[in-house]
Image 1 (tube, rainbow over the protein chains, first blue to last red):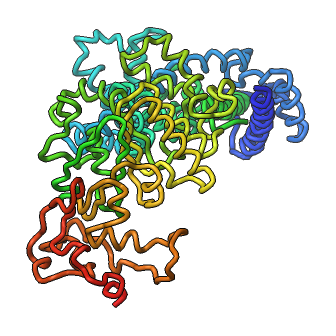
Image 2: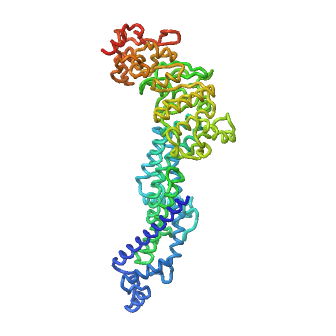
Image 3: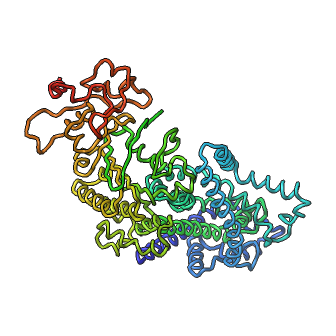
Length: 313
Length: 313
């Protein structure tokens, strides 16, 4: 137990270092992009521009700017939006992260739930029509990119089924209705669910032929117990391994999905802020993403020993 | 393809019957059929397996489940892979009892430590919570045996229980099996290719070749007067400590036949040193050669004048 805590501690330190490195690289690269946040403002005099640049410290030499920024970050302050004056970034991003996390959580639920169910059923009914349907669904799901699914989702629920949904699924000003979650979550989760299904099927096919599953049958256990407790539990180990990259995929995939559905989350902010050259927000979003990916992977690694007692930290 | 054909034998209460034969001779398939555990896509196409009055082949799924591990228990060859790596050893023993109605849940729980003690696992109280990877090979096989005898079955099938173990551990496992079968008054089917083991443990021997019984009888008779050339060669292929003569060991040339390409006539004739014309196209029946001793051969060793000389040719 103490070993585990120590391990988690070490990992957290590493995540912090990675996050700082990522945001530093972004900071430096970002300033190489031509243009700045104030070019869009029309009829702007030289003086006001200079005043704005000065207000945000953008007239300082780059190393100086970087030092200021790092100091801010260490105090948990990511600065102020360049476009929307006076808007503080940290609370903004925290709010947006919670929106993204909601969609991401349900997407993950779709991924794991649907993936496991399809995979297990396909494996148990190997080479029957049930398996063929489940497996080909998985192949299709894996081949179709999530933005295509998203567009078909929009068409279906927002247009053809407009009368039934009464437009509540989308076309609503603002965010925060339960009905708005399922379609984006499905679009985001389906490709990964297919991936999990294929992996689970292969993994289950392996475990149901192992000696210990034969032992479980020989003991006279009920079929449900043999499948769930003995076969599936072992089959889950490789599935959990890919959960890390998978969560990362869902986090980054949200950039596309949130823009298609107009979800006011981190992914939407990401694109908007880059287009507006809102330096502080771009760096902030990157920092959040880096930390999220790190934490997601840590979470998976912590689940590992719970599933497989042979793994200890 | 037919792996096992026309096998017929009885096992009485308290009796230890050995089934010997080369790899691929159908020993394991015979044993697995008794519990209807033949791996897919294999199946029992015809015949009966009687346990008392009940026919295992005709049992419903629920009946066979209740039968497995309760009336008849099986111990497998490789203890390293036969225990589920992610479940505690104690739990796996408890589960075997909880699956059947012989004991209540509480009784099952209370019996785990005594069962582990009974199979002579040291410090059983502390080790119930261990996982299989914390056990040595011999200890794992003991745990498997504990699982097998936990429901006090009347038949115990041990499929090469010592093959995967160190020589030093083998003897203690065999001793344990013998003692337990006596205490439980259970019949034992011991599958092995170790003739010495058979000689020391079994009342009766069944010799299998190419999915058939080629010889069967009381251990003493088989060892003293083997009648089938295969049995005879098998016995003469091993060095014996008590042998005073300095004769050369006999080797059986060639390999057992491919299941897909069974030879006509006697299945052993391509490798047989004593064959006659009849052996090439007519398969001999399993006939009685002595009271209680059966052999499937046209020649029979008692009719060979000087087997040693002929075999060395």
